[in-house]
Image (cartoon, rainbow, N blue to C red):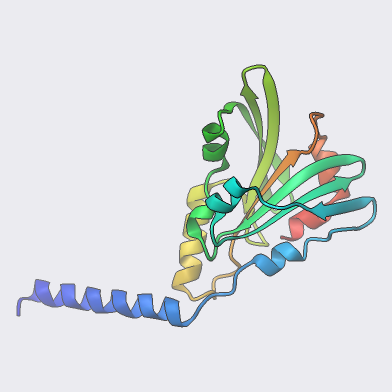
Length: 194
């Protein structure tokens, strides 16, 4: 047997071993981290919201927390997505906004504890909207879908030893009024424990 054939057989065997190990050793997801987000606190109240049928079809088997929060007089809808059971559920939020007909008018990076979040200013004809999002593994916050993919892949290759599953956090104003994001972040520090 040629050396190149042997190498191919070894690579195939390693692939099968890795695939089996991922199936035999399921990784813990981050759904518990999402559920630990406080529903109430000092000047903080919330209520869980059901996913729409469209959201259910997009997120599939992913664990999703959708909650309406009122923090220090500001109302926001939080969507937290743990893609450990459905990798495609966590993707660049720009795809969803553009798919829903919104144009991204501007992107502004916001410093947050442990990294950066991104604020989007969106427009659809005369309508205006905004959203803030970041990806967190509980330690570091960023906005890069490629970095998420690397974190999730490395976690899978190390069978979870490299850290927690990253989650995508998206915040949108619950009303047509703008949100003072810095004030919201100060009054709701639990957001950065995810």
